[in-house]
Structure formats: C-alpha cells, structure tokens
Amino acid sequence: MIERFDAIVIGAGMAGNAAAFTLASRGLSVLQLERGEYPGAKNVQGAILYANMLEKIIPDFREDAPLERHVVEQRFWFMTERAHTGMQYRSEEFNEERPNRYTIIRSQFDRWFSKKAQEKGAILLTETTALELVQDAYGKVIGVRTDRAGGTIMADVVVLAEGVNGLLGTRAGLRKTPKADQVALAVKEMHFLAPEIIEQRFNIQGDEGVVIEAAGAVSEGMAGMGFLYTNKESVSIGIGCIVSDFAETGTSPYQLLEKFKKHPSIRPLLEGSEVKEYAAHLIPEGGFKAVPKLFGNGWVVVGDAAQLNNAVHREGSNLAMTSGRLAAEAIFQIKSRREPMTADNLSLYEKMINDSFVMKDLKKYKDMPALLHTQSQNLFLTYPQLVSTAMENFLRVDGTPKVDKEKATVSALKAKRGWTGLVGDAVRVARAWR
Amino acid sequence: MSDGPKVRVEEKLQYNRYLVDPGKPHIAVAPHETPSRNLQAMTTICPAGCYANTATGQVEVVADGCMECGTCRILLEPSGEITWSYPRGGYGVLFKFG
Image (tube, rainbow over all chains, first blue to last red; front, side, top):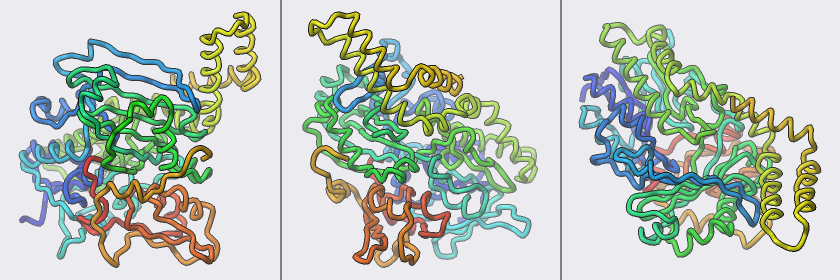
C-alpha cells in the first residue's frame, strides 16, 4: 500500500462515504478509515434517507441500495400522558416512480454506500481507530496517526467525517467539543414484526411506509421528541432529548423510551414485536450558531462533526451527504489547479456550502434551538395538554352547553399562559421560524 | 418517572453485540471525593447504565456495555472529570442495524 494519499477520510458514515465516493470518482487517491468492524458498525440513525441528495452522488442508487420503505404518510403527534392530538399528511403523490424519501437501516445502508466508494477506487481500512492528526511545525494537517502498527499515514488533505462525537478535530483544537445544550441524546430500539402486520397496523401496502413524530409529555418537559419509523419487517422506535436537560433532571433515557413505548397510542403498534437491538447516539442540535470553522490548512470538517443538522425538519444525513460531496468537489477543484490544500484554497468548500441549502436552511432556523430550550416546559408540556383538553371538550358529549365548553377551553389557555404569554409565545415561535 | 415497573438496562443491552477489549477500558473517571452534579447525573442518564455509585459515594464506570454515544464525554471531559477515547479499532459496540 502506498503511504501517501491525496486525501484521507475519517469515518464511513453518510458524510464520509459521500466524500470518499466523490473524491475517488474524480480520480483522487483516497484512504478511508473506519474504527468499526464494518461501515455502519458505530452509526445510528432513525433513519430517513432523502433521495435528492443521494441522487446528486449516485443517480441510480435505487437499483441496488438497501432501502426499506418509501414514506407515503407522516404523522405529527402532540402527546399528553393518555392522549395524542394528531396532524397527518398522506398522499398518493408519494407513490411515485422515484420516491422522495425512504426509511433505511444504517448499518446495511452504510455498507452499501461504502462498497460504492470502494468500487470507484477508495481504499477502506476498517477496525482502525484514528488517534490524532499529524501536523507540521506550522500547524498544517499532513496526516493521521492510527492504532495500527506503524500507523501514521500522510495525505494532502484530511476530511473529518468523524461524527458528532468525533475526537480528532477537538483533540487538535480545530473545533470545540459540543456543549451539553447543543446535542441531544437519542435512544432507539429495533422491533421486528411480520411485514403483513406492519402493513395492516399502519394502513399501508407493499413498500409504502409511515413516519410518526411525537412531541409533548413523552419528553417530560425536556426539549425532545419521540419517533417511530416503519421498515420492511421492523419498526424503529426512539426518543431523544437535549443532553443538558437529561443532566439537569437526571432522567433515565431508557425509562423514558420504555414509557414512550407504553403510551396508549404507541403500544398497540408494537404489540408482539421481537426486539433485536438497543442503540444510543448523540444528535447535533445546536444549529447555525453551533457550526464550527469548517476548514483550515490541510483539513475540512463535514456532517455531524460540523453540527450540520436541521433539528426542525429532522434532517441530518442529507446535510451530511451534501457537505461530504461539496468538500470533495472543492478538494478536486484545488487539486485540478495543482494548488496546495491551504486554508485559503479550502475556503472554497465553505463558499460552496454557504451557497447550498445546507447553510441557508440552518440560518433560517438559527434562533430555534435556543427557543426550544428556554421554552421547553411550555412547548412540550403546557401546550399539548391545552390542545388535548380543548379536543376532549369539543368531542365529549355530556350535556354541558357548548358555550360553557368553549369558555372552559379559553379560560384554560388564559390560566396556563396568560394573554401576554400566549402572544409572546406566538411571536417567539414565528420569529424563530421566519 | 412515576408509572409502572422500571426496566433494567441489562435487559436491553443483551440484544447488542460487543467485542470487549479486556483490561483496556476506554473511559476512566478521575479520582474524586464528592462527585459533581454532572458526574452524579451519569448514574441515571447513561443510556447503557455504565456509571454507578461506590459504597463510599464516589462514581465509578464499567464501560463494557457502552454504546459510545459520548454523553458523558460532553458533560465531563472538558472539566477533566473523565478521560474518554475510542475503543481500539474493531472493539466496542457493533451495531447490527444502527
């Protein structure tokens, strides 16, 4: 094996595979390091795959990628302890020739994506933990030291696709460790069920799939959300909340998941399932304001490691893929001009990502993380309860005159938040959404 | 948490595959007399239940069931209360599905 590469990619997740694939496709020599036994062994996601961003990398991915179900229906649930108020959208338009989004299982998908990168010529080294970046006297990143014997490898540029919990970049002082209010801890279980049972329970046919996202009492006042995704023969169910909220309340994440699974609206959907895995992972939630410096002399950072996650739309892997692809395209352009991988030259990556949907979307919601955090009691407990009470008042027929019922609903709103509180909350949410 | 019997984390971890690197724990708690609020919180918020109190009130870690999420690293590494590295290549948790 040659000991010097055009590029070393740290990690074989969404961002790393997108970068390795793109670099290798352009003819650069690429070494990709993965500490797991196989790509995906350390990766966890819900998981939803957005087709558009993968099409830009592998246009015909549908031919052989391990996809579970294409999503035809999305349910948003506002939960109280015993009820949920739902909004759902289902459309036959989602049954299209090239569906817009799919559920996937990451360890299978990542192996496929990595194989595609290897077919383009990327060299993958698994079971190899990158220990530190090698820097020259001027601080330029020139290689990586691994835990293999004689394991220092040199490259013109290192692509840090090391995930939300990436150590290399933080150890080298290239970015800070995320703060506890900038990451969520999510726990998740894989529940296996016969495909026919999944189709019956979720009112779907064939490869159709359903997504449920649930906010409210399930997070016990913490900023967080539960989710349930249908795969072919399993259901992914999980819940995630901001780490600082976990730390302040001392809440056990697996008890929280257990409670979510037992919610009367969720329980029948999982009845009789066989659990085959329990996973935990961090999710970047800091948004625009938490994005670190994206490039420097001899390095770029992509994906979760760069906090590129849209918490409002629950999009992460597409931002990861796009950032990996753009970083690779920037590197290719610099290489084509036979120029060095200096910070000045690599700023092209930042320019490209600023011009893309990635930073535009993150910028749009830059105030949302702080709002969700400071208002979590109101947004996740008070309002779902008020909505639920209003719905129950509206639907339960018990001889109370409707005028009195409406009065009760309005005075409950007023009592809980007051008019100023209600108007203030509306303004705050509208501003953060703008 | 109020309702229903508590689930034991061991019941959940048994579904997972691990390759434990004997004698080479990847997380270590620094010596302390009284655990900080965050260190004490790890005894309940670690999703793998790796942290526990000793008989004398300190907090210790047994990382065999660790899923390498990094929650404790976020909360405790900056203050030096723990050291956190990845397991050696190939070791640690191996997600079948992720």
